[in-house]
Each structure stands twice: as structure tokens, then as C-alpha cells.
Image (cartoon, rainbow, N blue to C red):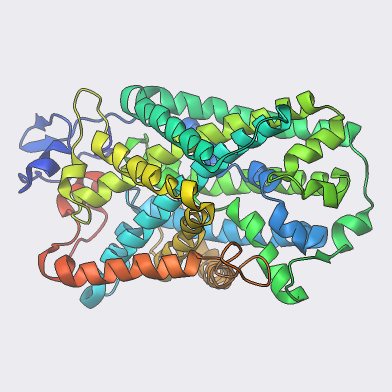
Length: 512
């Protein structure tokens, strides 16, 4: 499985590892002549990892579920044109990361690429910081997906049962139940997850067709001027900042495409399959998301009515169909997709956790792989338990939990920026002469969006409306920095090079 199939058996003997937990991170080895190999068990073929990635990004669903901010910051025009900028930016980011994935498809991705390409004198420090930034960001991503799924569940309950009074602790219990069930699925039936995600990917495509048909056939119509020229800002921001803050709605639908890379060590022919799945996932989701955005804007009915519920898509579906039950059926399809995204999030963040543990960032105890289940069980449960603890903040103050959720986008964008700055050499999948301009555009886009990710969505800023992404990002980065001086600088030996030699086909990296 993951750890570490060798598609090319040409690397030399694997030396005994110093740490027992790292040794346990490999399945029972087999000997080939003088060489020990990890037993291969790569569950994902190209189609499965593509649908895994396609479903995880779920860009059109994200646009449908998160309209509130953009409707109050710039209105329809900001979304109709803003998503075009985001699509090209995400394509540039994914192309840059795909190049690196073709060079080194490995769990941990960003910090491994940073280690390989960073200046020798700063290699260990930059890798350490990148590893922690990426790990915290993915914990936040899991928290955000779980929170969105739970909130959607509660929203559907409120629509169908008017007497139901939503409570914050209800939301926490829903998150608990969902995380526990899906963590157990990752533990006991992981072999089914590639098939579950493939079916979810098919549903992802079928649902968008169904939504487009229903909206086009039944919903009221707006004019092209309303969709492409109508501005609306009730947030208190001036036009320029409001328009840029509106970008964050489509941006959230194009964050996390590196999730497929963290599954690389369980993908057959990973050097070909993973980079293609990353890039073509963004391309496919871009087409679906743009079609959905334009269709929604043309058929959304009253903007004021759409903004009332937490998820405007519920009201948009009700206005289109004239039926609460029909709207519930449509949004329930989105709920199924969201549950599969949460399932995939646990898989991806667990592999990142496992990789960061085997490389000594997290305690190596979490790098253990249970041979009965063939899954890094401890690495599955660590992020799940962290998110469950954070979800308890909902009971006292929902804004605090959502503040941590906001870390996901800014953390991943920073991790992308650091990795892309490294300017990787071309691998099996590369952009040729377009590589440099695409990387430059990706860096400019990433830096620009990162700035606006820290802005609150409305003025005046209160404890409820404050965007805590930047302070929390600074706090987590400060933790990594201080921890470097406590442990990293003197005790951290850097990445486990024996693992890299097993993962990298044919020993293409010149490890230092």
C-alpha cells in the first residue's frame, strides 16, 4: 500500500530504520536479492483518484452553498466575473503543483517539495515551517467541511420542521457523529473508499445537470444586465475591497486540490496519474462551477429572499420548484456529496499526519500502521479528535470555531506559495515553455488572494464579523517557530530519506 510501492525496483537496499515506529510504517517487507521492498498495495487507479479529487474539490456545490458573502460584497457581477479570475488562478496553481507531483508524488507533498528545492542552508527550517503550516491548514479544512455538512443538515431540518429550534450544541453533536462514523469507515473499510468516491464523482456530475435543468426549466429569469453588470454591496465596504472580498466565495471552491497528492502512495502509476488528476480536476470543476454560477444568477429569483437562510441554495431551489420537498431532495444530493468530501478529507489529512509523523514533525507514534487494517489508524484518529475538540467551541461561541475554520484557505495558499516559489525542475508532467509564466501568474494570484483572505466580510467589524484567519494563522505559525527552537533546530534530523528513496521511482531525486 502506501507506504511505498516501488514502481521501478532499481533503488538499492533499504537500511534498517532507527525507529521502531518507522519500521512499522511499512508492511511486511519482502526481499528481492539483496533488497528489501515494502509490499505494494496501491488501491487507487487513475479513474478512482481522479474522481476522488473531482469530488473533493466539489467546486460547483461550494458556489451553490456559499453565496451569502458575494451577494453582499459586489453582488451578481462580482461572482460572474470573479469566478473567471479564480478559475485561471486555480488552474495555474494546480499546474505548478502537478509538475512537482510528477517529480515526487508523496504524502506530505508541499513540505517534501520544499525540502528538495529549498536552499541548503535553510532547508531544514523552511521544511519544518512548511510541514506545520500545511498540517494546521488541513486540520482546518477538515473542520470546515465537517461544519458545512453539519450546518447543511441542520438547515434542512429547520426548513422541513418549522417547530425545530436549532441549537449550537446540536451542531457539535452532528459533527461528532459524522466524524466518528467516517473515521471508522477509514479504519475498517478503507478498501471501499476509492469506489465510494468514484460513485460520488459520478453523482457530482449528474447532480449539476439536474440542477441546471430544473433551474432553466422552472425558475424565474433575470436579465444579462443583472447577471454581468449589477453590483450590490450591503457589507459597508467600498467597491474595490468589496469586489476582492467577493472573490473568496469562488476561491473556497478551488482550495484543497493537493488532497490527491497526499494519497499518492496508494495510487498506481502515481507519477502519471496524480498530476493529471490534480490539473484535470480543476479544469473539469471550473467548467461545472462556471455553468452553475451563471445559471444560478440568471434564475435565483429575489436576492433579498435568497440571503435570508444560512445556505441561499435552499431558498433558490424552493423558489424554482415551488416545493419545500423538492428543494429538500435537491439539497440532499449536495449533502451526500458533502459527506463524501468529509470522508475524503479524513483520508487525505490522515496520510499527511502519518507522513509528518514518520518524518519526525509529529511524534513518530502516529506513523504506526496497523497490519490488521493496513491503515495508519493513529493518524486517522488524531485529526478527527482535534476537530471534535474544536467543535466543542460551537457550544459556547460558534464564531470561535468558525475562526479556526477560516485558517484553511490562508494556510493552504501560503503552503502553495512556498512550494511554487521553489521553481521545480520538469518531471513526467510539465508545462514546457509555459512553465515560467504560469508559475509567475500562480504566485501573483496566490499572494493577492492571500491578502484578501484576511479581511472581514462586513463593516463595522465586531466580535461576530471579525475574520480571525490571519491572527490564527500567525498563532499557528508562531507555534511552529517556537517549537523549532525547542525541538526542531537541535533534535529534528529532517526528512526520512529512506522513505523518499522507496517512494521516488528510479531514484530521480539527488538527495542531500
